[in-house]
Length: 221
Image (cartoon, rainbow, N blue to C red; front, top):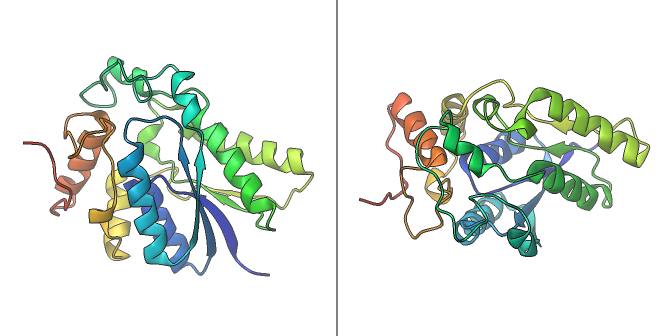
C-alpha cells in the first residue's frame, strides 16, 4: 500500500518542517493551504507555495477569506492590532481563531479522501498547548475519531508527530533535513517584514537562538 498523506501547510516553520519530515519518510503528499481572512495571508501563502514547489507536491489553496469578517480574532480583524509579547501573556488569547484547526483539518482531509488518501498530517506542537485548545493531544484524538466516524473508515489516521515537542526541537529536526527556512513565514502582523514582536515571531526568534543558528528571515528594525 502506498504511503500517502494530505498535509495542511501554512507556510510556517512547523508545517513546512513536517512536510520535509514526511517526504523523508517516503510519503506521497498532497498539500492544502487556506486563506481564511488572516492578515498575513499573502506572505503565508507565498511561502506555502514555495515549500510545495520545492518538494514537488500538488498544492491546493482553499479560499475562505470571507470568514475574516465573521471570526472575531486579532488575526482577522483589520481594526485590531496583533498583540505583542510571549504566548503565555493574557493578551495572546486574542490570536485564537475559533474552530480554525477543525475547519481546515476537515476540509483538507475531505480533499485528500476524495482522492483515496486516508491520512491527514498537522504540524501542531507542544509549544502551542498553553494557548490553543485545538493543538492539544485530546483534540487530535477527537479529530481522528470524528474523521473516522464521518467517513465510516477506521483506517483513517491523523499524524501529528510534533505533538509533544516544541518549536526548538522542530527546528533542530528541520535543520538536519535542510528545510529552507528563508522560505517560511511566521509573523502574524501582516506587514512586509516580520515584526519580531508578536508571539509567533518571539517563539521563532527564541528557537533559532536556542539552536545557535542565524534566522534567515528579515525583521523590522
